[in-house]
Amino acid sequence: MASRSLVACGLVLGLSLALCGCEEKNAPGAAGGTPLLPVAVYDVKTGDAPWNAEYQAQATGSRSVEVRARVEAIIEKRLYKEGDFVKEGQQLFQLERDQYEARVEMARAQYSNAEKEWKRVRPLYEKNAVSQKERDAARAAYESAKAELREAQINLDYCQVVSPVSGYSSKENFTPGNLVSNNSLLTYVNQTDPMYIDFSIAAPERMQRMQLAAEGRLVMPKGNIYVARLKLLDGSMYPGEGKVTFIDSKVQPTTGVIQARAVFRNSDESIMPGQYVRIFMEGDILKDAILIPQKCVSTTQKGASVMALNAEDVVSEVPIEIIATVGDRYLVGNGLKAGDRIISEGLVKARPGAKVRVMPPEETLHDTAQKEQQPAQQEKEQGQEQK
Image (cartoon, rainbow, N blue to C red; front, side):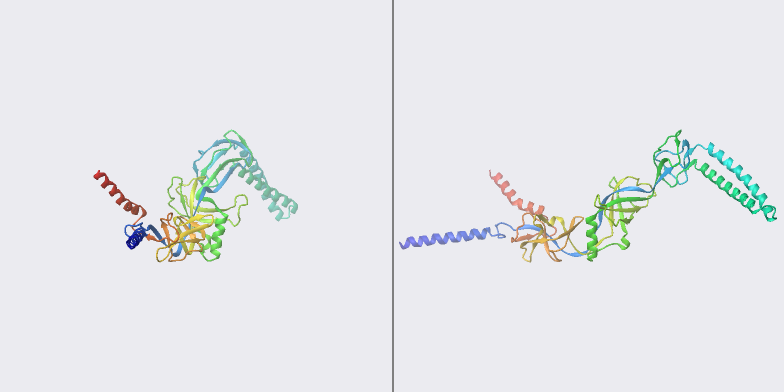
């Protein structure tokens, strides 16, 4: 009986030692056991950062001018090529002049007679040879004839329809041979230097920036004049920079946006009216901001959170407040402070309470995965060689 008891105790003791050895072998981080989860971290810091904005926009001429007939006449000629660039004062249409030339000749004759009569009566009045009534009548007739001659000459000049500004012409609304009346719209001319870039800002975004500025967390440019840059349709950046000269003070009730406008020099005519572009508005500066990469953040129904590490590299979940998206980063309100460490790579497998291994900056998860696969690959190759 005693020998059996000694054998039983020996078996129990051996089993206990074996179990302890297994636990020790399988302990996280132990030699030959399960390795610690490798992660990359982002060090949270504060600082001033630009907060630029990007919007869809459309180019329009700084002056889109209607070219209208000022008299009733038949169009004789169109003197420009539709769509061509025209200069200020360049003649675009020629209207029939005959009737207006005749009116000028008639008005000139009436003016000549009235002038002669006024020159005759004035010295006679000074000698008391005619009454003041006759003198006033002669002067009135002279002034009236003078005005009628001027009006007739103006109407004759209107038969030459010229461009009021320099810019790109539009198509004609009436072909030669048509009778046009006073105020008939003949065409448009769009002044393209400078060029206007019209765009819209979502009202919540603008209000958010204004709120942050009121809290002292954002500084807007002096005079609310933002620097503007353009990306053209081919993806290239326009070489010059412009300025945002107008941001409306009201929200459009039907669309919920705020109208805005930038002005660009366009002497080389590389921006055309109606062209769609991307505009970048620069000038807002975030003060003492905490900006973290978007890949560090997990978003659920409960809100946004990050996985932070303590001094022993143990993971904990930290809820955060996201104020806005700034490029590829999030502006964080509450939840983080300068000096915190959060996981940027390996986030999917990280669990609160687990200890992890922080990879050096030069190492990536891809490199780590390759290193872990090498022993298994070597064992596989050795097994094939033995066969």
